[in-house]
Image (cartoon, rainbow, N blue to C red; front, side, top):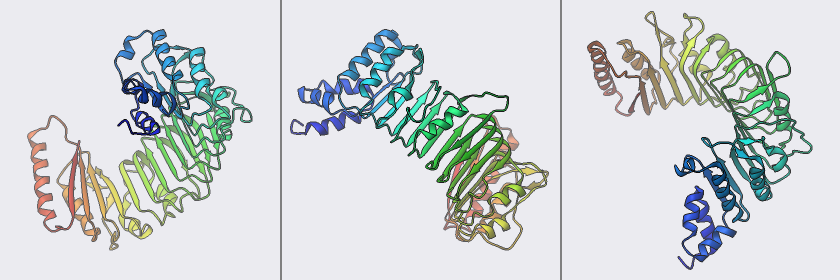
Length: 419
């Protein structure tokens, strides 16, 4: 160990993560203390990592963090997550950021301060590549002054910011590729809550727990879009056909428009969502390169609507992964098995139910016949804690029927996933 270069020891300490573990390990010997001071590049303070953080007074905790940070030189990654800690002094936090900002490439920051600390003003015009802010407030963004020339990933969680400042912030990041918005507090100047974002470099966008009247996203290079737990009247994506992965989960939206961006879609994942199938199908029908389609816990706006698997087979010839959840309405399955076309390239089939009955096994059998080259079948189910004798018998009958059915498909691997 004593022959290890001090730079290697610095890498080892940096991979420990938690600041407490790093400090303890650095006490091994003089060489390790030197590695800690001169070659440590990553440091993390997380109030959930060590219970004693909760027992310290705020002033004592600030002193510990200050002493720890100021013993290092050249930190590239700094994470300060203080979820259940009282507000820190703004001057102390500013001192941490001023000391490290010239070398920082990654900052994960969740600290409540009095008054609010302007992270953009302190860390702008530096080498920052990844910035994650939580429980913070951003006001008065000036793209020319608060510029992030190297920033590639931006995450804002529970951050208060106006729609204008949010768009200006993107403008201040000419190389940004990833944007996360989680439950932001959007401050608006008028009654209608509208957000318009534009970036020519964005590739991945994740939006969670946001309520807006209008959300318009213009992103010429976008490849992955994920909307989760949102309430929107209108969502519009303006792009140039680069979108490959579209995921929507538990979203309420009256008008969804992803325009001409669907030609290169490879993955569509829709769950806990109410759709008008003809309109939705018309929107995605040009996605001839689609390899994965997932429609899970989808509610159809018209109860008589049926997803025609014949049409899916014809329009998505490269489809290799199909996932459908079972919904029975008045004895009719929403996914029809009519037609003669087969899903020739589907190798993985996922099927699930919320309420099981005798028709489910027949539906599984019908889908197996449509997938002649299937290699793997995954069956998802919901099993309640308290079950009547009839429900137990139904599950037993289903298990027996699947065992008997799969004897005809010995080449297919079967997996059961119950919750």
